[in-house]
Length: 432
Ligand code: SF4
Image (cartoon, rainbow, N blue to C red; front, side, top):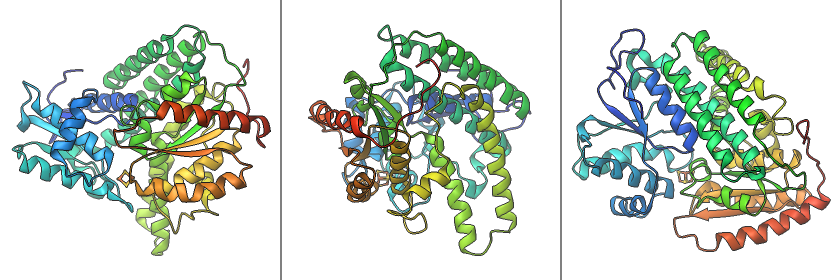
């Protein structure tokens, strides 16, 4: 973890988080790291919470009632682990809990966490939930720099994760991909931390770090085999990306010699932007100042994504992420985006897009009792039938999974059978 200054950033301005230490629950390990680096770039102290373990579950169970979703339990457990660490000053500790509008309980996590802290003897520990509704007030006058830097950090992490999953199942030397990924992650994080906040200079520096990462991976020896089944992973955003919560499902798939394509974090960001336009249109404000601002923001974000992704264009042939408009359109016959909201729409749409990209199977990872997972599970049989029988399987997690290996083994047999008769063939990067 980097120790950094007084929260003055490069502009010498104060920030409400100055002198505090922010803890971020890493949904995906890499994005947690780069996101922390975005805080460092502003001169703020931040780190990801330590790896989840049995103590996480123990504390999560102790401080929650049992009615909460599994991700809430895991994050509460991880935060409480931080607070019980010797040397932690609760009054100087800030817990980062994202929030979102939507049809499910996610929006309740932050107020709920505040209540737990209050009732458990940590009234001075703060919770931040950066939101566009209050102009990211937690970041004071560094809000704009933070939002842009954090967005770039998330894109970079998503790209690295994609390359990792593309290479790891085929590595010539066991463990080499993971080591290389870590090397790239350190490089990208240091670049984010040290680059000037001036937007153009910062973007160029992060792009250069991504090019270095790409070149390292291009030189990494792999033995790719076109018959390796490709499994699309969709589902609840935290559970599908948090390896501890999903019992390392992707790695277990790889042990069965399959490759995973997991829906990333930026997909959710694009969805929320799309939703913003839809809601403005619903109330007849599609030509308002808010709509104009949202349009500008989207253009800027698209530009950043394009710049960071462009160096990987050849590497990602056949792995191109479908635009959110395409995902929502694909879901429309099953869950129209103007009638259903949130991850269920994305999951169904993405499952279809991945099938059309030549995936051999789809796995939906959700916390036990997650309403998104339950709705999707009801829709998947029809989706599968319409896609020529692609196997789509829900896996639910609550920390008590027991037969995952056996279930994955059976599932992959179905995927291999489907592979022989699938309607859509894959495109491949050159040389594979
Ligand atoms: S998406 Fe599922 S797990 Fe996440 S808050 Fe909503 S209901 Fe809970």
